[in-house]
Structures are given as structure tokens and as C-alpha cells.
Image 1 (cartoon, each protein chain N blue to C red):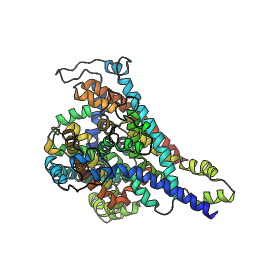
Image 2: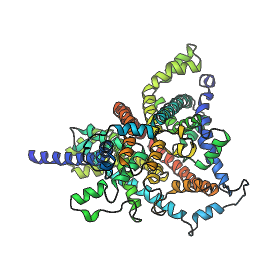
Image 3: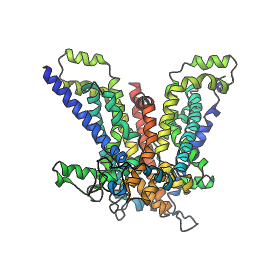
Length: 274
Length: 290
């Protein structure tokens, strides 16, 4: 009995670590090849580099114009996320508190966006009419808009657990609606807002289709588009492509390690309670 | 009192951004899909249902792109759900120590840019030197080494495999949360009644997990129909146009200046997804009631 259970546990661990290996192997591959010479990396093998080529990273940063791209990615992901979180929290707050038919319709219209695909062709026309095409402010507004439906959905669900007495007390004490929201509701929403912010920053950092359609200026490219173009230029040099990839995913992996708790709980709560 | 205390204009900012950048383009799309809008002429002409007729006619390849999209969607839903469910059970029941450690690693690909995942797999799938074929040769299965991305009959399945690799962690995490939400009492009652593991799974776990499985299926469905990045970077629709999907075809037509047909294709997808979206809301509402 005991050995049988032990065997079972071993087999289970074998399965789990086997899956882990399949997941990690390709990621390991870019990290190790990023440090190889061009000829060493030509086969993208699993072996360790003979002499770690740290200068690959500086080469890539220069050739791929990564500093500018990094700053752009930071600007887009943090700017759009801040905008989206504030606007979504405001909207979800009133929509959760006012239950008229009109407010219900607005709510449904907003969360319909979770399913709705983007029509890039007509969106291009809209971007042209508003003179936002090829501008950084345009891409920030666009990203904020893409994240709003899910954010409203999640904050709205969270609002159901926030007692009405909280905002009513503040309002009776003479707070203006905005002040009641900022001073009383916003702090209570912090857990869900942090989760949303982390998810939204990651989503935008990783996104690549919007700049592909709407940013033709290379100086406004985020990391993803810079990597894609770098790959087009240096396809034959996997050591540099790997180094570029490592620099792109390093911030994401760092955020993941630090904020794992919020990411995993956010994913789960959105789906299980929703 | 209520309208003063909770002013509707609080929702104006979110609604404005969403309206201008999501809703407006979709509505305009319906209108423009009846025109011959293109980059060669400045004049628009009403062409009725011509664009839709072109998309659905058998002489063109659009039907093939739609079939590809459906194949991708159905296959990834099936593979991700089955594998993620097995892993979720393994990590909640089978493995106690290191469980959260495994979970963190298996989720990792889901936070990486799809672009990067696709680039990595272009090297993994390299027929001559890639990790996959090298591994197959090393373990004596060299006969299975294939041209994963350039073989017409294989390429779509390779794309599906990469997307499964990337997406199982996400689905698994949701399913783990769903499994943990099932009250332990049910399992205790079942084990007192002498139910086997399989019976417990079939009659307790699976039915109680159904709402969560519905959610993961919807998430996979919405993602699958919109798939773009992974195809664009892995195969760019090739070989030939063997792996083109609706969204990569839209991009292709868009970049060739055929805006009318690209809009019609987008609108078709829009209508399908709106219908699916409404069905989802109805199903979820019904479950909330019961």
C-alpha cells in the first residue's frame, strides 16, 4: 500500500515536471543562445556558450534602437493603464449604484466589447479623421479603449461586494460625488484595481497588432514591433535575435515574478465568479 | 437624490473612448462593407452584397480562411481544455509538494508576448537544426522529424500546437480555481459511499466544474476566432495560404488596399461574435438564476 502510493506520487511528479520541462525548454533556449556567438547560435542548440558574449546585448540595444522602444512601451502600457483604470472605476461605480434601465443598457454595451473584434480597417479611417494615426497619444487612447470593457466588468462585479452605506455615509456628510468616489470608494477598490493594472500593463506590453496598423514611425515603436523588425533584418543571426527577445521578455518575467499573486488571482476571479 | 449622488457623467470617459475606438468602427464597418472602398480610387460606390458574395464564393480562397479559423478554434479549445483539466487535477489532487511551483512555470508562457513565443518556435521547428527535430533524432525517432511549418498539411497543426503550449497555463489556472471552489463535503460523502476515483470525477467534479468549463470555452472561442499574431509570425499564412485565418486575411487585403472586402470580412466576424456574445450572456444569466 505504502509503496504503491509512493509510486503513484512519483509518477505524478514525473508528469508535472515533464510538463514543466516542455514549457521551459524553448524559453531556456533563447536565454542560452543570447550569449553565444553568431556561428554557435546558428543551430540554436541547448549547449552552454563557450564564452558568454555579453556584448550581444549592447549590440542589440544599439542596432535595434531598444532604448527608445523600451521607453515607448513603458509610456504606452503605463499611460493607457492609468487612463483605463481611472475611467473604468468611475464608470463601474455609477453603473453599479444606479440600476435604471438606461444604466443597464450602458453596462451591457460596454461589456459587449469583451467579445467584439476590432475592425482595423474602419478604425484606420477613424484614426485618420481624428488625426491620431501615427501619434503616441493616439495609441495610448486606443489601448485604454481596448482594456475598458473587461476592466468595467471586473470592477462592476467587485462593486457588488462594497456596501452602499460606505458611499452613502460620505455623501450625507456633505462630500461631493467625486470626492466620495476618490476618498472612499477608490481606496476600497484597490485590490481589484491592482490586479487589473498588472494584467493591463502586461497585455499592452505584449500587444503588437495596434502599432503594426497604426504606427508607421519607427521612433514611436514599442518593444514588440522593434523586435519584429529586428528579426526581419537579422533573421540569420539567432544570437542577436535571442538577445533581443531576452531583453523584451525580461521585464515581463520580472513583473510576473513580483506580481504573480495578483495575476493568478485576477485571472481566476474574473472567470470563476463572473 | 440618486442622480445627483451618482452622476451618469462618471461613465462618460469610458463610454467615449470605447464608443470612438470600438463601437464606431464596428458600426461603420457594416456600412462600408457594402462599398468598393479601396486605395486606388477616391470615390466610393455602393456594391450591395458583392463583397459578401466574393467571400462566400467557392472560386475564392476566403472560405478556406474561414475553415482554417474554425479548425484552429475548435482544435485549440479541445486540446487546451483536455490538457489543462488533466494538469489542474494533477496539481490539486496528485501533487501536493511543489504544486504552486509547477503552476507558476506552466502559466509562464501566457504572460510572454505571442510575438516572442512565435519567434522562439520558428527556431524550435527548424527542420535541420531545430530543437524538436534534434530531440526526435536523439531519441531515435528521426523518422518523425518533419518540416513542421512548411508542409502544407502540417503547418496549421504546428500553429495549433504552439498556441496550445502557450495557452494551457491560463486555462489551467482558471480550472484550478474552479476545482478549489468545489466544497470538500461532496468528496467526503462520495468516499464514505465508496465511490471510485472515476465515479467521483464523473458525477461530482465534472458537473460542478461545468460553469467554469463554459467560461474557459467561451474565452478560448473568442480568442480563437480573432487569432492573428501567432499565425502572422509563425507562418505569415503560408505555405502558400495554407494557414491564413480571417484576421490575417483582413490584414492582407488591408495592406493591398482592398478596404471594402477587408471590412466585409471583419464585419462577418463581428456579427458572428456578437451573436456568440449574446448567447454567452444568456447562458451565464441562466446559470446565475439556477
